[in-house]
Length: 598
Image (cartoon, rainbow, N blue to C red; front, side, top):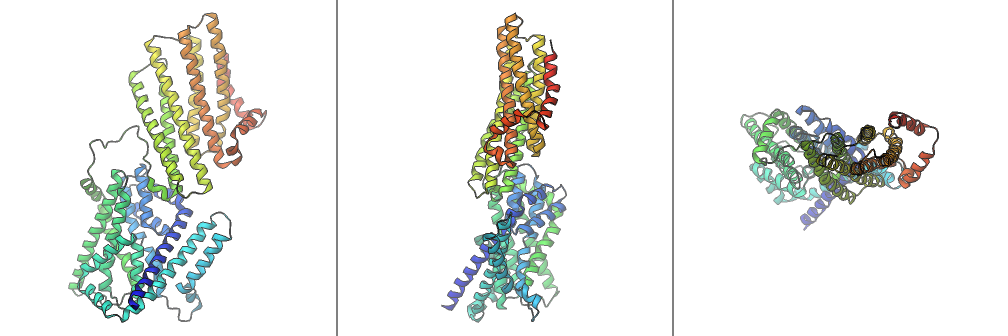
């Protein structure tokens, strides 16, 4: 019965360990998610750099699965290619061993030394918990909760390890436990299988290694018992990767999972063979019977992952080819020249990263809409059927992506987000709609261009010249808007509203002029209809740009967020200052040349 209670106590310790890892990892990801994304985005085609970045990121966030989630999201979004993603995943195998290196603090023997006593888990864990609770409950400064989560998670993790270690002590007196350990010594394959199955169940290699480190406190486990288990653990962690990479992912994401499985299986086979050869030749005779402690387990896991990473990294290219054999490309798996980045809901775990990727994708959507606008206004006077087809193809991509990004952001908003993140998500949804409308107006103008050619309608020379100036102004404001959005540039965003006001004045002036031409018989009614409708769509496009500018400014200014109409109203009343100066400059650039035409 005492063994049953020990097992229950050990499972409770394991639960605390897992929860501590979850809390600490969540704090680390929240505190550094956006920075880690930028680090991974800088990975070049050099696989060594990729592996180093993968190891670094995993060591920081204490989770190879989280690193793989970020990597797969960036791969799906087109930021990384398959070879870069694979190199990061290989590095993540090394980075994940940092948890075991932390747990080795269990082996500290202070010998009465005050400093060493402080670093013993029995002292450090309660202190970390106290610090965490103070930061979470009483300190209200920016990022204090994230730091508190890190401290509290660290403390819970070690209390879980200590509980597991205490639960193992009665097992040392059990003959059944001794018999099991003996079987592991005789059958390395049993150790590999045990490590594999346990890791698949726990869904965490760090948790399984931590449990092994706790059991080593019994003093009954030797190196020849623990090394096959660690190898099995490394294969078992691939199952988690395969699940992460397979559900609702692109072909390349699935190939990343295949590469991770292949890497760990090949590494295990090669390392196992090397160990058996070393043992058969009589090298390191004292190692096999050496009693394992948490430090030896941590060191072997690190060495195993580091050596296999170094040995197989040069063959990353071959791993890529292998993945294409396993996950075969579809016949239509060709790059679409108008394709926008794919958004992966796996990034929901890291809201900072998910929001950043959605923003990047919406910026690409804005570029497509701008390109459509340029193409449509360019062939108002020189219609080209092939250009019209391109415009319609891009418009289809824009429309489909609008639904995709809105569904993605709505899904993200259903996760736990901060108030600031929720505001940004709402603003991004509105921005995507505004860009989509700009694309619609471009399509409307494209349809007019086709009708003008079909019906052989011509504008008067003066109307053509005036329209060209207005078209240039609208092209300018759309380009300015997309650039401001992509760069998150507030200064550029503030330059949009003055230009929009000038465009409104230009449209009003052209409307008045057009009516006068109709009255004077200088313009035929059929041409006048298309001219007036074109002015309407151009003005609406600039209005959408103004809305996007307000959304960009509202992210950082709650007053604008609450009432942007009042903000615009106050701007229009300004008689001096930067806004008035910008309007004067834009009038000189566009309105004055327009008025000067006779």
